[in-house]
Image (cartoon, rainbow, N blue to C red; front, side, top):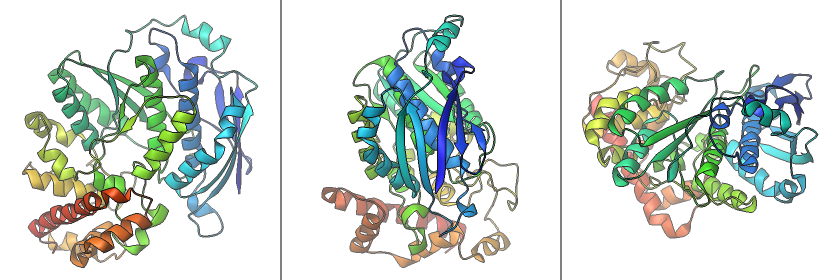
Length: 441
């Protein structure tokens, strides 16, 4: 059991309202990197309940990052957390603690015990409000929707499509990044330039930093989407009740069909799985928030998203600045260590297949896969994702098998069985066409 107590101290008020620390039972005291300065500098009153949810999401992500899955007993994967979190209204949070635990357990594959305590230090108290008055204020947040903006290809397409479909409206992009673990902020910055040039005056972007200031050990980032959504809730609170939050993610990654039996359960990420989004929506409702969570691409492959993009010219000129890789922190074995993506993990392979489906120029990857030597080097490792993709293609699961495997990976609406199974079949065809073109099968 990993016992963690969240401590609030007087500290830099614009970064967290109070300094936030994790006191871990192994003796470590880690500072949470919860920085919402972009929002603090906005005109208007901050919704403290929304800001508190962003704080809560950041705390969960920090706990997730603090404990290495491989450094524990048992199966060396499933961890158990007991976390005490100070909040303004502990009774309200404790009333739904079992709901929250269920959602986070599904998301991370761990066991969570959450206990909410009355905060001894107001998160956004007098010190925070006094310091905020000294900032030069930016313009007021304006828009009719919020979209998560991760720096990935799906989030780029999602923003393009929304702006094309709503030509008279503005959108707010909610981003977060972990300075200790990834370079997603630079991805976001690169994509923002062509977007703002094409849709001048219609985009506002707000960034929150999350994670730990130091000491992050786990690198699976299972709870990353919760940190993004916490930031989006804060953004939506400036726009008003009922503001939709868009989570652009292709259905293949959202469902994350286990390519082999070994990838079932928490070994397969569930960051935008429909079951998780439904659970989270229920929690938000119980906390009094009315910001619908919407994934418009739940039934689309990545290739279909690219094919149906409303501004293909912009997508073609900017897609290479996005990143989809799930293993960017493991470059030691890459053939080209100066690229942004490995090219051989599941997200990268889905990306390569999607790019092939629209005929865009192929990008540079850490693993080129263009030579037989490169292919054989990767395929010689049976647990590598490319080997799993080949097995998935050759196995050719029928519809009943696809549905059974999908259901084993998380509850799904049975009325959508045909649409979910069709998605996986189309995914297989998309990836198979790319694999045949590359000479992999």
